[in-house]
Length: 158
Image (cartoon, rainbow, N blue to C red; front, side):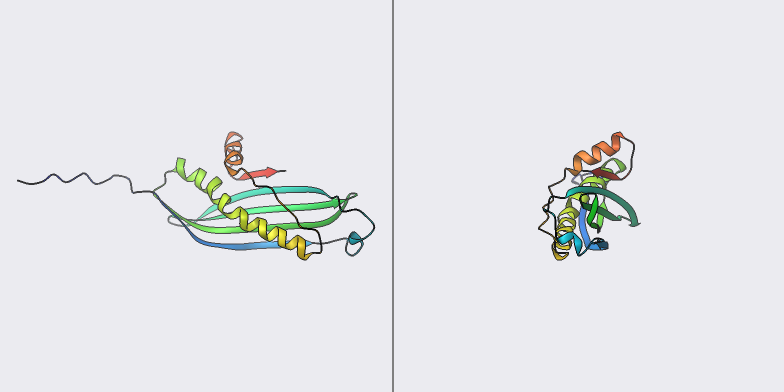
């Protein structure tokens, strides 16, 4: 008597892995040095911008780039401008379009954010400025907002 074999699954199991995390681009500008270090109390107006983009590198492999821009101003003069493009290569297998969107638009930027935050903080400190603490970001909410607005990349201004 032959035993029945279970049917083969029609869709492969979902798999995800981090292939590589790296700095793609970094910029630090201190246009008003050395005058920015003297004469005023350090109470800057901070502008934070976050953008996320992704592209397919090859089959089941995607590059996600998280762009973090911070401008600190004192009395309408730029104290510093920092821009970090933190990137990663991610393998995503078995995801349909509905699952791939949130993975690349929210989950991967969430992985990259601590690396970008550390790079930004290090640049500010190495530039002679006080420690910069950047708050956590809800990439799930940003992704949902970008989908409602019909945008592909995740963008935020704080």
